[in-house]
Image (cartoon, rainbow, N blue to C red; front, top):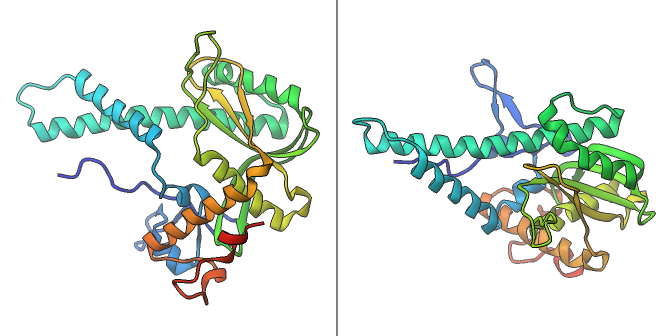
Length: 289
């Protein structure tokens, strides 16, 4: 009995950066999520998040397990309900918690995107309440917006994705590639917001920065920053600008994950790899600039 799908739908991109997250169904009746088989056929690039999914994420996995345990303990079992039917309802209930969190995060992201582009604020009061700290940070810190939800791709390494925000920051006077994350509020002993900054976040941002600079040299060596927004309470955002001196190590780590992704999927989307023997490691792993 399979209760939990082993793989979730992945995002795919055309080499020019155009999202190809869905394709037409064979019977012509609508669309379906793009699969690895479609990607091979169309020569699509995986998203940066897709690539990094080969890495373990203990924090996220633990949270999902916790949701499952809570659902199993709190969901009433119906009279005469078979165990497998109850198990399916537990998984569905657990999934609803995960989806609700993802939907709220998406709503906050959308609000930031709209505000960065037009200055408009969300009309949904629940979203507006959580968005206000992000707006306060944006107004105080962003002096110029260069790009919002920018699609980027790296032709040499065959990956792509969307950058939340590229802006010049007042505190540094430098360009920064910024990724927004929403997170349940945890407070320290002093009552301040204590977010968790995950190890994969700077790898994701580094991959975006390397892809963006291939097209816009102006953003070469731009800073990368994670901005965490409270998803349960309107608390001041927490910002981390990742050290520039770790840039090379970060990109090496991302490329190592990419090589593992290529091996595990049996699909190498970039021309960069086409003529390299299987046992010949990419030079950028050794000499990433």
